[in-house]
Each structure stands twice: as C-alpha cells, then as structure tokens.
Figure 1: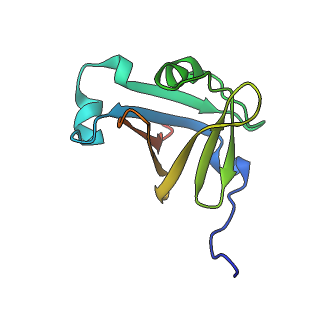
Figure 2: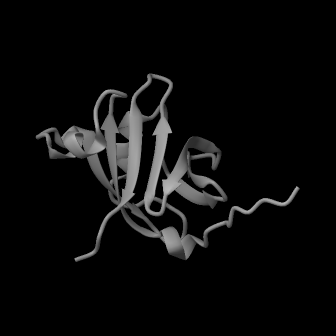
Length: 115
C-alpha cells in the first residue's frame, strides 16, 4: 500500500527549533510564557543532521544524549551517540511536532521564526 506521506528533505527541517517540556495538563503556549528556562530550549538542527546548540538541554530531558536527527515520513527522529533513535516526534502540522516521554511529560518542537 502506497503512503501519501512525503519524506522531508533535511534542508527543509534544518535550522532553529524551540523545544518545550510540559505536563499533559499544560498548554505549550502558557508553559513558554512562564519564567522556567529549564522547560524551554532552542535547538539547532544542523544541515548535516547533527544537533548543535541546545542539544545538551534536550539531552537533559531524555535518557541519553541527543546527538543527531533525521526526517521520517510522519515526523522527526532524534538519535543518540550510536545513531539509534532516542525519541520520535510525530508531526502535528507544518512546523509543529510532539513526543510523549515514558514519564508522561510532553516535548513540543516548534520551528522558530527567523527575524
């Protein structure tokens, strides 16, 4: 069966993304407005499919260090040191991805607007 999902080119996803850590009860918008810098990271998705600035912040929320990334037809995978998937973010709509951790916490990835 053919899938209608298109695999994004890495160049389409490379750039700055804002990651927000919330509980299921928090709206990402209200969480981002709170003065809790540890709940918000800006992560640089580099064109060579590695993570630049912000990787340490994201890694603190995960069970292992986040090192790289790759597009999937229905989202974005973050990889660890060995190249295996650490976490998968499912696509909600253009520029917005979500993942629920084993702890029940939710990480939202949103494309940052370049100014």
